[in-house]
Structures are given as structure tokens and as C-alpha cells.
Amino acid sequence: MAETVLKHATKTALTLVAFAFTFTLLMTVVYQITKEPIAKSEAAARIALFQQVIAHDRYDNAVLQDTISIAPSALLGNKKPTIANIARMNAEPVAVILEAVAHDGYSGDITLLVAVNADGSLSGVRVIKHTETPGLGDYIDIAKSTWIKLFDNQSLIKTSDANWAVKKDGGAFDYMAGATITPRAVVKAVHKALQYFEANKTTLLQVIETEKVAPTEVKQDESI
Amino acid sequence: MSQFKDIAENGIWKQNPGVVQLLGLCPTLAVTTTVVNGVSLGLATALVMAAANGAVSPVRKFVPNEIRLPVFILVIAALVTVIDLLIHGFAEPLHKVLGIFIPLIVVNCIVLGRVDAFAAKNPPLPAIWDGFIMGIGLTLVLGTLGGMRELLAKGTLFSGLDLALGDSFKHVVFTVIPDYQGFLLAALPPGAFLGLAFLIAAHNWMEQRKASKKSAAKPTNTESLKPAH
Image (cartoon, rainbow over all chains, first blue to last red):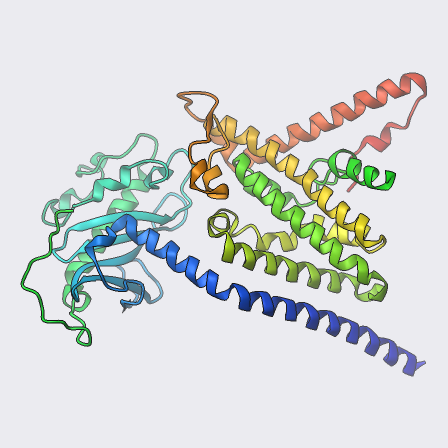
């Protein structure tokens, strides 16, 4: 009796193993085939995202590879170390692309992509992830409205610290009726990201030694 | 041939996974904010179901009864992973829309349900057909529900078609109700539950009417109209 139980169990286990092996093999093969296209399409998607905050003709480096790691910071709202991408023209830093997280949205975190020009002005801001209420708070998303473009060319100099708030709170930024908590969180997060940039400017903007071509004297055109 | 016709009738109407079997409600409720989202996920599910049924049916005699569920889950999970990778690699925009929902197909009860109830007992061809047509039945429900919610919430139909089919479809959006103020409830999860309830009610009403017409000739048992679980 014991033997037949053992025999039965072995046979069943082997069947399961055979299935596991076959289908793991299938997955491995497909993974190998799709690895490259997936990496390529992810890089393309990332570049397309960057294109929204900084025009691609303003830099000539491999922006995806040109990164600097950012320690958790209260100003950026990141709880884990993240990376920032540096855009350079002739090895000279043009802008830094930071990821900032607002924890005080109406529902859940709002993740922002913030591109800060070397002179401290904003190149552009985009919301890349949010779960705000559809139809009310989601106008921060470029797909829904152009509100987020209010931040283009903004800076700590152009708008004083006290004015970095929505109009309802006495600040300089418009908002739409129905949702103030959402834009309030975004304005605050962008403001703090600019403060982070100001405080860490020298580290973020250092010219990489390896690629140092004779430093150009020509000032970058930041008017775009 | 009549077997295939019966399977089709079951999948589309009599045993529709969305409004009769009520299996796989998770994606039904989560994704159906627009027609495009609903139909895309429906078709992806149909593909997985046809593949899963097709993979299980030929080996059904080699799977001991005791371990059939682990084996089926293994097969379904592997197929979903394969389809997920393929979509990610070769249809990136579609992956952006369906991204988080494709892995969810693994836990969609309807897939395991059809594999266990049909593919494990039938030859490959009818099994593949059953998986596909059940998926299409689900797609119809997801598309209708998506249409109802999109129309009520935003006053449009087919928005986001460019995400599924490419940029040339960017302007194929029917603004059914111009200057629509929007009806938020329809876009939020409660809207999905309410919409599905209306669809189930409509399905039951039509079935009942059909039955009462029949019972004029000879009385039938109305108990059979209740949705099977």
C-alpha cells in the first residue's frame, strides 16, 4: 500500500515538474526574444516623456545614461534614492530633470517630472503619475488641460517664495473651480523641487570630467 | 457543426461571462471607463482564453485529477506572461493602456473557469472556440459597459482610440453630447457597479420575456432563469 502511494505521488509530482519545465522554457524563450524590443520601447517612451519638459534640440548628450543619484530628500518627497537626468550641450549642463513626489494630493501621491534649467528657471513640468479624481482634480494632467504649463519659465526669482501658492491662498497660480487641494499640492511640490535645485546646484550641474571638451564660453540660450 | 453553434450561443448570450456567469468582475469593473479600454482588455482576455483552452485540451488526459488546478494555473500564468511580454515588446502604446490589467488576467476566474469546465473535458478545436467565444462575450459586455460609462461621464465615445491603434486615429472621437458638463459618478467605481446591474437586468428581462412567450404554450420552470454561479 505504502509503495503505491509513493508511486502515485512520484508520478503526480513528475507530471507537475514536466509542466513547470515546459512552460518555464516557453517563458524564457519569449523573454529572450522580447528583451531588446522592450528595453528599446521603454527608452523611447522615457525620451518622449523628457521631450515634453525639455526640447530635444537643447541637448546633445545621451540623457538617459547621464544620471546622478539623488538621496532621499524632503524637498523632492522621494523616500528612496532616485536618479536625476542631466541634459548637456557640448558637455555643458543645460538642465536637470528631477522627479518630485507630492504626498499631499487629494488621493495618493502625485509624481512630477520637473526640468530645471541651469539658471534656475523651469523648463517644464509634467505630471507622470496621479490618482486624482477624474473630472475634478485631473486637470493637472497635460492630457486633460494645459494648466501644468503655468510653470513654464517660472523661477524662484520671478515669483517670490510667498507667491508660490494657488490664488485662493494668496499666491500667483491659477486653479480651476472644484479642486484646490490637487493644484495646491502640485504648486508646493514644484516650489520645493526648485528649492532643492538651488540648494544642490553645484553637485547637480558639475561638468563631467571624462567628457570635458574645452568649456564653452557661450552662454546657453535659455529663452525657449 | 451544431456543437460550435451551441458553444457560440452559450458564450455570447446564454452563459455570457459578464452578465450571467458573473465571473471576472475585477477587470469588468476596473477597466470599463471607456469603450476602447473595455474592448482592448476584452480582446486580450479572449486571446488568453483561447490559448489557455487550446494548451490544456490536448494534454487533458495526462493531467491527474488531483493536480489539475495547479497545472491549469501554471499554464494560464505562463501564457499571460508570454502575451504580456509580446505586447510590451511589439505594441508599446497598447501596453501603456492595458499595462496593469494584463497581469490581472491570470487571476480572472473566467479563464480558469472555462479551462476547468470545458477544455479539461473536450477536444482542442471546440475548446479553443469556447475560450475565444467566451472572451468575445465578455468583450461585448466590457465594450457596452465602457460605452455607457464613457457617454455618461464624458459625453464622448471611442476616446483614446489612438492609444490602441496608432496616432492616425487621434481624431476619431465621437462627441455625442457637445459642451457636456460631465457626470462623475459614471467614471468612478460605483458607476461600474450600477452600469453592470442595468446590463444584467436588461439580460434577465429579455430572457424572461422569451420564457413567458414560450410558457404561453407550455409552462416552464422560472427558477432556471436565475444566473448560474
